[in-house]
Amino acid sequence: MAAHHHHKHAGASLAQAAEAALVEAGEQWTDMRSDIFAVLATFEKPASAYDIADLVSQRRGKRVAPNSVYRILDLFVTTNLARRVESANAYIANSHPGCLHDCIFLICDSCGTATHIDDDALTMSVRAAAEHAGFAQVRPVIEVRGKCADCD
Image 1 (cartoon, rainbow, N blue to C red):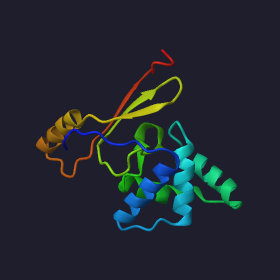
Image 2 (image 1 turned 30 degrees about the horizontal axis):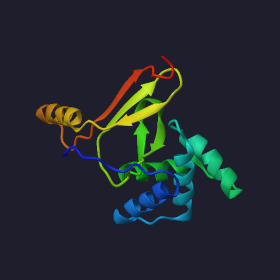
Image 3 (image 1 turned 90 degrees about the vertical axis):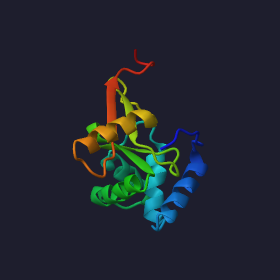
Image 4 (image 1 turned 45 degrees about the vertical axis):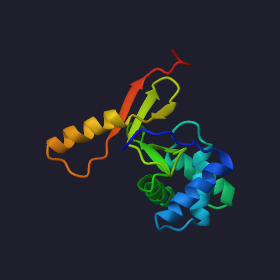
């Protein structure tokens, strides 16, 4: 993966980029997927499937099961529309869904903010070490915990 600059989307632009990326991956952009992505994109911090299910349920006026939300979130992670913060079992919208990078999160232990950064050199080193140890289909997820500048 070469270093490059990418456009970070927000609002309607983010929803359009997510829809285009999902359709390009051969999937359909259904009303439910649209609603789940729209709610996910409103969170500034990683959100649980239960938090998302509650808000989608309110938006739709009927209960949406967290299991359904989990399935769609898994699809979003697979198609690069969302990132999963493993240590929190929570999700955050990917602000540049057309661009694939390994996950590096800086997670604040005080406020819960998760900042996603791209460092292809670092993740390529992790990939190489894992492959050297015999792992195949490596996709690093790196989480660094500490205090953000706002909480320090």
